[in-house]
Image (cartoon, rainbow, N blue to C red; front, side, top):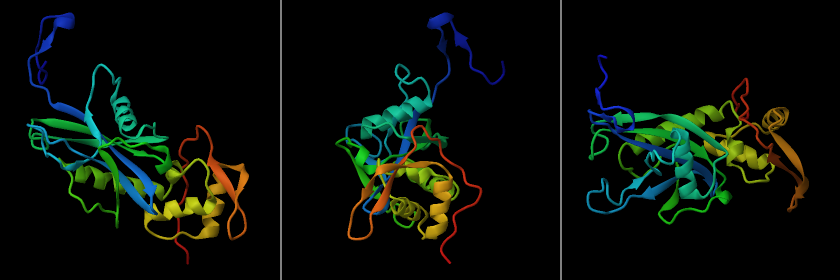
Length: 242
């Protein structure tokens, strides 16, 4: 058939007679740490033949056809290897491919982004968090990972405007002001307190726990994300305070 490569032999012995691109999965992993949105980055190895030696890069790697049943499984495996957790939220971001993005040859990567609470992860030795300031990362990344990260930041910000995604960044128990602050960090702007509280409670996405947070002010009710809860989509975006 026109446009398709010929295959020689039959059954399991059949071999394709055309070159195949390098196929990888990269994961943009976000958390909230030190009152800022942060992304997990790795330092690339310095071995002979390694592209971008010692440069910062997103976690990822080649698809393992013996372990990964699909792209999402590969992304989840990379996330687990680098953080020790399975993300409560993992979304496919897009695909990047060209003959020039990797000096080793024609390469295509399939990118995902994940949201995890900072206190839930145990990082690999070569991984650490980097803050996002003003919607950007100041450090230069290997390959085209800077473009992938910029796309992930924009996707996250856009979806936070009308969804419950920041709830997946929260610790096991949190207050409503805690959750509002995470929304404000991601959006990089303040939100109106009363309207935020009304919208979150009416969405039935969180539930109270039988605890209160004690402090110098009045006790605050603690909440948790409902188990197995998918993201909630709101009919309107969040408004800043007047």
